[in-house]
Image (cartoon, rainbow, N blue to C red):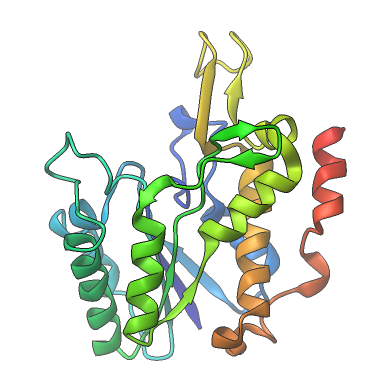
Length: 242
């Protein structure tokens, strides 16, 4: 069985010039049985619209086989109002594009699972984040999935709660916060509350696998997730404190 991932930079495999940035899709295999294959088509900067229009999804479908799964996670770049090649309306064109991906998956006897976007790290106090760090796109994704009977995982809520648990300071260590000259790709340093470092991407990959394991909608993954390899919240906090 193969998992096909389509999405944006939060899931994608990175080019060398983007390191130390990582996407959770790079590490999902660490938490699944070895016979589960993963094909990750997610790309930095893509929205549902651009991923469809640039034929990236069409290329992905060429590898679909009956019994496979399609993981769909977009939203971060759909909100870019100033970019007409990427912008979508959350309860309009965004959902229409999700439906397009779902319908094509079903045509190939591939099971689609819609994931809401992982939250951005926008704190308003030490243990509280902004309510809508990606606008209404996570809500629109879950509304669409529920109303059309599509399997879905609310990663926005799951990550939102995780960051709040970790607090503003500890959660920062998962993200692309770099001091000047800390990494050769960013000599001036960086403050980025969207993209993940390696440790952060591994934490999110574990949370994705845990969500699949626990959800009643994805019972097929019960025997595919390596439960003993999943990160416990207390262990995540301890590791980030080191």
